[in-house]
Amino acid sequence: MKIVVLIKEVPDTWGDRKLSLETGLTERDASDRVLDEICERALEVGLSYADAHEGTDVVVLSMASEASTATVRKGLAMGAASAVQVVDGDLLGADMGLTAEVLAATLQRIGFDLVIAGNLSTDGSGGMIPAMVAEILDVPSATNLTSVEISDGAVEGVRLSDAGSMRVRAELPAVVSITEALPDARFPNFKGIMAAKKKPFETLGLADLGLDAADPEASRSIVISLAERPPREAGVKIVDEGDAGQKLADFLAENRLV
Ligand SMILES: Cc1cc2nc3c(=O)[nH]c(=O)nc-3n(C[C@H](O)[C@H](O)[C@H](O)COP(=O)(O)OP(=O)(O)OC[C@H]3O[C@@H](n4cnc5c(N)ncnc54)[C@H](O)[C@@H]3O)c2cc1C
Image: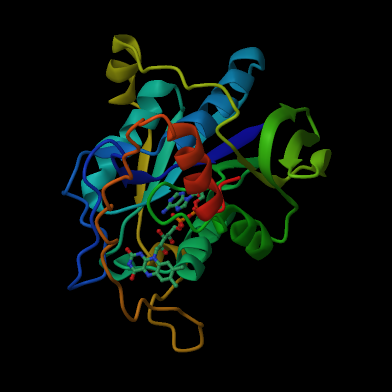
């Protein structure tokens, strides 16, 4: 069984996150660069299966700039057997369509039985990459899973909705995305960090994948304007003069919070 986990480097959610108002790009150096936590959980799903099933090959795949190599390597330190990183200057500012095309072309090249991704990144927050990749590859996708059970020929899981929960199943090969309901990931230990240095790490460019970011036939979307989120307004302070309960209830009703 070959499991490929899609991993993405993001600006640390605990630090400042900024968009450049000039280029429209994320300012990646405004805070620490980290592996998105949801991708760590996705990797944990693959590694847990591999721990219990000998012969499972877990590969991490990322489309990211050269500066993200250390983050991709963290996937190896956690336990993945190999890594593939797609790096190409023409991918700067790639929209979701191009991102999905690149990931799908790489998956076709390296082969897979199961692809595991996060359901939503903490920077782009598009939430569509896993389904788009599955569509291009023409394989089933089971998205937003809160539990995952992998067997030889299929993957099953539960997806929650406001109305209830549903159990979904897809025959392999397939793409799944997982939510934060899945367990926390393991930390890389010293042995893992040392071993990561010797594990296979393949770097590919657009030409290796037969893709052209500027293909005039492809439909691409571009950011045409952006604005900074307005600063948070000061909260309302209710001083208790014997009527705080009423004031609180009025505030909640006015703001349609009850
Ligand atoms: C119209 C539009 C225009 C955009 N233009 C720009 C732009 O000009 N500049 C810019 O910087 N960004 C731009 N973006 C954002 C950029 O396209 C996304 O950040 C990127 O394509 C991935 O989407 P996401 O992070 O929203 O994915 P999501 O669908 O939220 O991610 C879900 C999961 O997919 C996997 N995944 C996502 N991306 C990758 C990746 N690169 N490698 C490996 N796995 C991955 C991960 O497992 C992740 O957890 C644009 C987005 C849109 C919608």
